[in-house]
Length: 298
Image 1: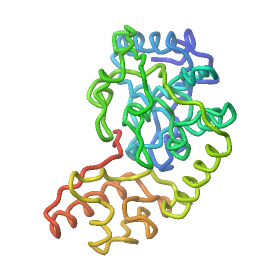
Image 2: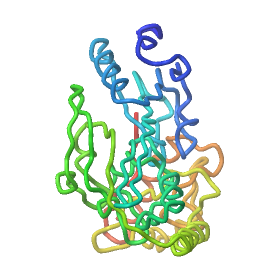
Image 3: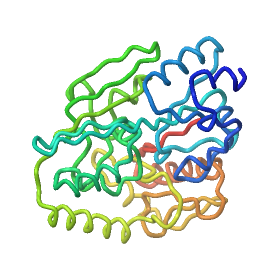
Image 4: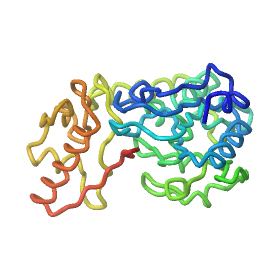
C-alpha cells in the first residue's frame, strides 16, 4: 500500500509512516507502526476498514495509548488512533454525548465548568473515553458502567450499532469490547446537576491522592495487574519484597507496587520480563495467579 491510497480518505498531515509508537503511549515504549493514521470521523474509519481488507493489512485500534505496551518490533499494518472529537452537554438534563477520542480529563473539566457532577472519579485517568469504556476504567469506587447509558460502535464490516449499558457486558476491567473487535465511536452518559465547589473539591482530593500514591512522575501504563477476586495484587507484590526491583530500564515502582514504570529507557522486553518475574514470585509465595491489566500489542 502507498500513501496516495490513504490520502484519498485522510488528510496527509494525519498520516504517519514508520511512526515510533513511543510517541503515542503513556509508557513511552514501542517500535514503529508501519502506518499510523489519526482518525476523526466514522466515515474515515469505514474507508480505512475497506482499504485494509482489500490490501490484507492488519488493523490495530488505539486511543490515547495509556493502557498498552507496544512491542519493540512495532506494529505491522495500520494503527488507527481514534480522535473523534464530538462533545455535547445538555445542562438541563446532565446528559453528555461524547466522541470516543475525547480525553477523560477534558470531559471532567467541562463538567466542572457546567456544574455537572458524577464524573470526578475519572478526572485523573489518563485516557480517552473510548479506551475507558473498553476496559470499564474506574477509580475511587466508581467505574464507567455507573455513568454510561449507551454506546455507538462500528464492527469490522463497517456497520454501525448502538447498544444500551446492559448490553455492553461490563465487568471489572472488562466489557464486550475486549472480547469483540468493535470500534467505539460515541458514548452517552447520564450524570447529575451538582455544585462547582464540591466538584472541584472532589477532583482536587483525587488528584492529591494520585500524586501521593501513584508514580505519575514516571512513564507507565497505569496499574499493571488486575485486582484479585480475594486479594489486593499490589499488596502481594509488596509482600514479596519487589518494590524497586528492576530488569533493564523497567522497575516495580517504589511508591506503589502495582505499577511497573519506565525508569530509564525501558524496552518492551524489559517490562514483559519484569511482569513474568513478578507473576512467578507472587505465585511461588502465595499460590495466587495475577493477571495483567495492560494490553500487550505486537
